[in-house]
Image 1 (tube, rainbow, N blue to C red):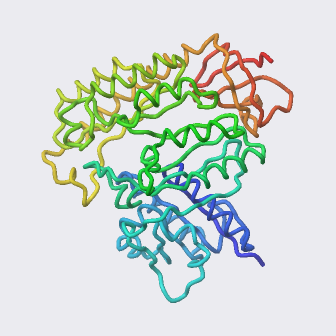
Image 2 (image 1 turned 90 degrees about the vertical axis):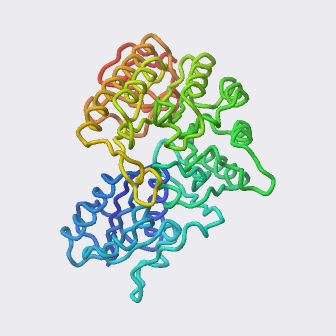
Length: 429
């Protein structure tokens, strides 16, 4: 009888891709995957630790696994396991703890009976660990980079992921070609700090060099995750705006719209610099989807400084804003800054910015009405309507009432209506 396993993943696309690799390894070894709600022999929780809230969410799923099957082996890995191994291993529900370096070799540890905790020093990790794997979604992700060298004052990620490490150009291009041959039309480049790709090579390369190389592969479209503002040079903007394959979608984290707070955050730019980049991108690509992150309630943030953030964001042609109340992470510089902002004030500021974000997104979607978008039709239809569903290059969810089997094809869709953050249209080809 096959051993059954269930996995639950929290956090970023990199975590999701790493979970996919764990699933692949276990299946190839004869394990059977079941839903996390079902009874399994092994439960794997691939955690995130970007906020204290997601730490609590990780603990919830750890306890849920133990309740579902008290006899199962509960394995915790990911960023929470990496930075808080003592706290995680002390939980009575946990049988094994694996760090971020160990999880992509999960079979090596899973049946170990002599040791419970396998968490190596992430800062000793010098080599990129390739996690190439065939995937089962319409869009395929390729991990091109791991780690981060920035050490922003609020961020735990360098302690969870280590220093920046890059996948080789040859390996990335091989993965792109293989995925294209398998029928994928779009790839997503993932990493912890994508813009640092290539800087750790003996002969330093830039992220632009990688994009230029991908432009010459057979893949029809590629999408970029999050970039830092200083990494968007005029040369990068010129290349992206002339690219035949770049999906017009970028996420550029601002984190605060107040220069004083940006300095405390150790972000190496000011609001004016960020604003110039956003306007240049919008001018060169009017249809581009521009997302951003904002932290509210950073230690010391006054109401006047928050209002400065709000006002500056109001003026920017952003398409969406992800809003996060500040969450203290131990061992970070920000955790020592005083005074702290009260939780009720953080919630109030977050709510006000979320309303602004909602309005920004509504305005962007409305601007697409009457436009023809290049849409990748997904493998599964929309559950509620039965319509074909897909995603445009500029990150709009599109529904099409069409009976044809067009899954995993690129289609030109005329946007006729906007409702509930989705576009409704018809295929024009």
